[in-house]
Image (cartoon, rainbow, N blue to C red):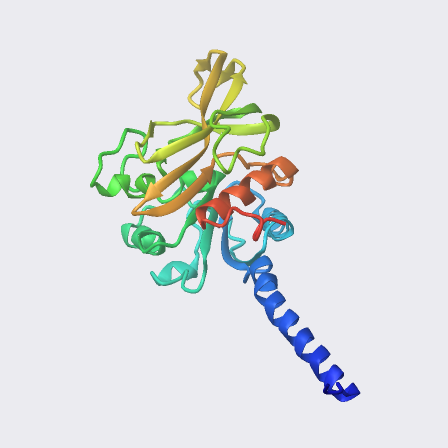
Length: 284
C-alpha cells in the first residue's frame, strides 16, 4: 500500500481549493455583472435641474447596478445649449440615455435628428417630464401625421403632448399591474404636479398608468375663466421605437416628487426594463 505523504495531502487540498474557487468564480460573476452605463442629460427651462440631476443619479445608483454620468447645463432658457448633441454618436459606450432636459423652444430639425440617432440605432431611452415637451418641430398642438418632421419626436416617445394643466395633486393609478415595471408598485397621489395632456397615443405605446387631477376654476392667460373639471391623462408608458425600448413618465416637476421613493422606484424599474435588465442581477 502506498503511503500518502504530508506534502501530497497538502497538494491535494490546494488542488481541491483551486477547483472550488474556479467553480465559484462563474457564479460570482453571474451575481455581479458589469454595471450599466447611464447617460443623464439635464438642463433648460422651468425646473431646478441642478438639484434634481443629483437626486436622480443617487436614486438610480442606490437602487440598481448602474453608473450614471451627467451632462448638464445651467442655462434655464427653453432652448438650452447642449453641446453633446453636436454629434449623432453622443451616446457611444452607454447602455441607455435619460432625457431630462426641457427644450420646449428647440425646433431645429438637424439637432432633433442627432438627438434621435442613438435610439434609432438601438440604444434605449428614458424620458422624464419636460422631455415630452421638447424638440417640437412644426405645429405640436394638432395631431401629427406619420412620416412628417412634426411627428419625429412624438414617434420616439409614443405619445404626443402639447401642454399641461394647473399645479394640483395627481392620483396615479397603474392600469397594467402585470407589467414587469409596475408589478411591485402601488398607486399613489403626488403633491402638486403638472398633468400633461395626451394629444394622441400611438399604437406602439403601452399604457402603464393614468393620472387623475381635479382642476379648480382658474383664470387663463388670455383673461378668460376656465371652468373647474376632473381631468385624466396617461402618465407612465413604454414605447417600441425602431425595435428600441423606450420608457417615459410625465411626472416629475417638483424636487419633492423627484425625491419621492415611489418615483425613483418607478424610474429605476423603467430604466432597467428599457435595457432588458429588470432582474435580480441589476436590482439592488
